[in-house]
Length: 204
Image (cartoon, rainbow, N blue to C red):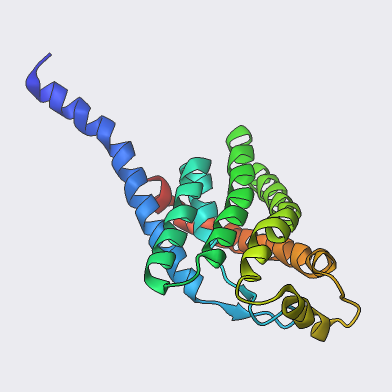
C-alpha cells in the first residue's frame, strides 16, 4: 500500500473524532452562554432560575452519543465555576441533575433511533431528573446551601409562596420536583423544534 493511500485512510479515520470534538466544543460554548440567560420563575423562590442550558446537552446526546452530552454538561459547569467565583453548589446541582436527564435520554435514543425514540428517551430522562432531584437536593445541595443560609430561612422562602409549607422535604416535593420535570420537558420541546434544522451541522 502506498504512502499516499495510508495518509488518505488516516485522514478519513480522524474526521469523525475531529468532528465530535468540534461539535462538543461548540455545544459546550452555547450551553455556557445559555446558563447565563436565566429567567425568574414566579412560582419558585427567587434563588431558583430557569434556563435552557440543558438544550445543547440533549443535542450532543442525540447526535454524538450520551457520553458527549455528559461531557458538554461537565464543561459548561466547569467553565461557569471558573469564571463566576461561585460557591460551586449551583454548578454541582446543575451537573448532577443534567446527568440524570441526559444519560437516560441518550441511552434510550441509541436503542431506538427515531423521533419517537428521542421523545420517549427525553421523557424518561425528564422523569428521572425530577425524581432524583429529591434526594440530590435534600441530601447534597440544600445541606450545602445551609452553610450560607439556614434551612429555616430557605423553607421560609417557600412558605411565603405557599403558607402550608413547613419542612424542606415538603417544599422539595411540592415545588422542586414538578419544576424540574417541567424544565426538562421545555428543553425537550425546543430541542424538537430546532434539531432537524441543526442536524446537518451536528452530523456532518
